Image (cartoon, rainbow over all chains, first blue to last red; front, top):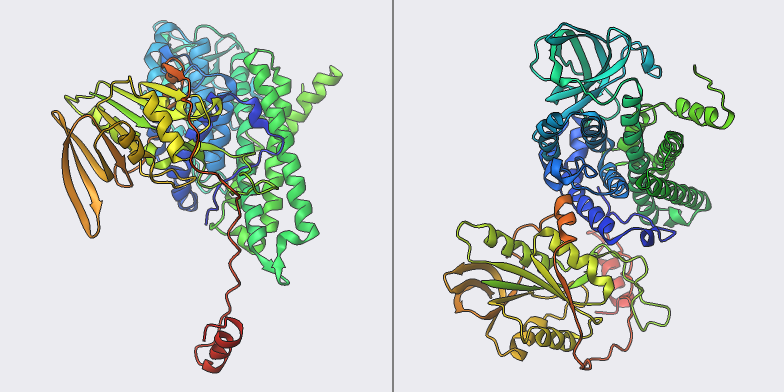
Length: 391
Length: 249
């Protein structure tokens, strides 16, 4: 069962949002309530991504909200993007992941590093959901160390020849295009737009996940794929481009995780008021109150971190290290919230009647993808000491 | 054809309403505001009509009576698709006060159909629409569950006991609409929200009138008593409870 969703705003953070942000939030919240909540448990149980979500997400404008209007986006600020991610992840991390990838890992690099022709060709269709995108950076042998990637392309005169493989790719099997990061003959990382149907390009699905079950994950395999020269992203060289994409996505995750946490908290609070043991609601017991109070404190701190990060990003002052800290803190907060909330529901917490276990399993991926929990900590460590612990 | 829809800003229907400490008002802290559901369905229906081929609708205006804090609600209506908006700059009072403000604001405003939701989901007064029609000396139809525009007339279904009547009426007129007028309210798109920024929102001064109703106090309903289960075979216990506890036999 889904309780009415009344997320907390303990420190009246709404006062820091504009009217427009609130309208954005109510629009996405309404969509999630109407389209996601009724079907998401069954989709996750069946390990199925409801494909029609792409069109609906496109219709409401959840793809590329910060991309300029002339390319099909909404021209909104980064707080609006964050608010959208929070509301989507209240529904499911898989839905938020689909939107994160489309926006931050596909539309963002095409807009930031692409040619004008590439922008005009791809962005409007990606914005409406008519075209689905995915992003290839992680490889079977290179996760936290993408700079050692093995995927390569050669200049064949009138085209590039791409070889290699990418792994853990959200949207891979359903994507029409993939933004793929590969090294050229000089060993410089470049971005290429690979289109579905190019001979030699396959995208096998990764089955039997216990996490993000309502999201498509797979591989990208390139065997002598001829990529037209006009598909190279011309305006970026080096790993920096891929990392800038990850910054945008991690920023969204820092906001998104709060949505999953708030859904768990809302469920746990209402359940604890309803469930009686020893002739009184379990919410009246000190140990349950401790859990609820600590969760709310955690959520409130995460809300402020995300909001401040949004302000800095709007001013183009958010550093990758700040984004790392926020992603790491907020996802861990959400995972801890899910685990504590599950305890409040007792055995009921493990059933599909409530969203908590699904969120918890999803967050095990979220805490690992887009930079693992440990690597983000080391990014902070390197920033404060000036000494990198992983290179 | 110009259509005006009256929009009320109401607490989200999931809000837990509680009176203030002195019971003289409702505690509005942390309340999320939404477009009154019946008004939102009215807007949805009019947008459907505007999008039909050869539609006669030139403009959809939304109007609300409310302070600055009602603007997100009216901006949402613009984001959904209304063309422009009017805000009568005063907090809404009782039905009479609100209807008077709307009638005054529309005195010099040219609209062919004025549409109101049958009631607002906060006070459920159910009389503002009829009062507007009366004050503006316009014919009105209440309980409208279907609305079509045919050349210069409006064709409506009005819900009556056991069925509905079909009514056709020339414009200008007031339609008071209820559930069924549209299936599901529209969700504004992000682009719609951005476009709403530049749509005109006219703020007009309120009229000098006093409400006719005084709200004396607010009290929550008493909590429901616990339900006692009695074995179907145990008639004696049931009679005992009804006689001695419930005291109804």
